[in-house]
Image (cartoon, rainbow, N blue to C red; front, side, top):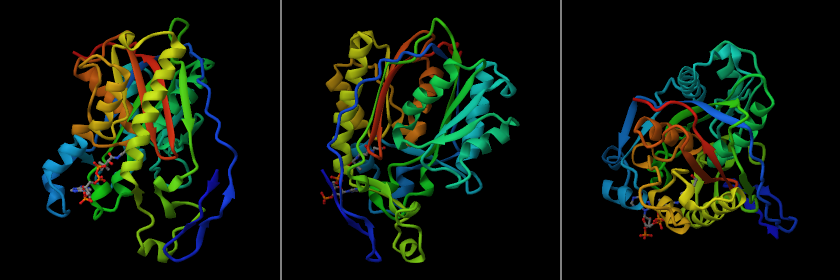
Length: 360
Ligand code: UT7
């Protein structure tokens, strides 16, 4: 498959034409990690922006946004808040929920595509905020980051003599063009964290993770890295902002999330009727409904938070897990099917069980 050449606004070639190897579909990863989720915590910035507020500066409307996306409002980080601040607050909440002291952590993984900086990573900043010097790093699989993170942080936890913290944290409103109605209405900021602990009787998995990087411009922030560095000309052209071919992404999202979730159920030897709750990446209520319908999910078993959170990328699945717990939809021992999809393209699904206590 030929990878197309792309030209930046200043005329330079940003990706040369190359011949990519033939795509090979990933095999489902049968691994079931002996790891329990023993704590959940979230942080949402105080400020909310509803559709009417956006409609004052954009050529859009509350009716269009609700009908096409399901979003009513979203949280927006304060000017002084960066992703590590959101992540740290979520981390503290999850540790308190699990009854774990930060000093007992063995590693911290931050799933994010909106880090504080290109370097250093956000993980060490969070570790410093918690007052620990454990291994800490970022994982970028865009909106699939939390599900990828469950595989990576889960594997760390499975062999550690203490808990591992996985955080999904994003400040996406910092990388969207506030004047682009195609993206500015979609995204929100927030963070949520889980404490992962080795536990012989627990099961995290199997996993279905995959990627297709043959068309990165479908959903990207072009001038944010080494391919096309953020020169003054590119910044003036707005190439540092996230852009998306929404319709194409939409179709891939429904297809990939459905196939990935189905592969996990098959690998686990269970059916959709064995799933207590489905928590999909919150990108669009219509995408979630389409996936639920294709999976044959019984009514009322998909947890939806996009109405209040918008799309928070790697934070969306753990934020929805916390919301489900806090609203009584997720109880101890419930089997949860999670599925995500995002830039890359990346996708991922797994089965998890929350072992903690139900919030009164
Ligand atoms: O998190 C990673 C994964 N992300 C996703 O999965 C996002 C996937 N994509 C989507 O959710 C949807 O494609 C969008 C919500 C982004 C767009 O919805 P759509 O139903 O695909 O709309 P569209 O892009 O086909 O646009 C339909 C019309 C167009 O006008 P014309 O050409 O029909 O006259 C757009 O210009 O709606 C117009 N439009 C808007 N109108 C009012 C686009 N954005 C807006 C807006 N307000 N905000």
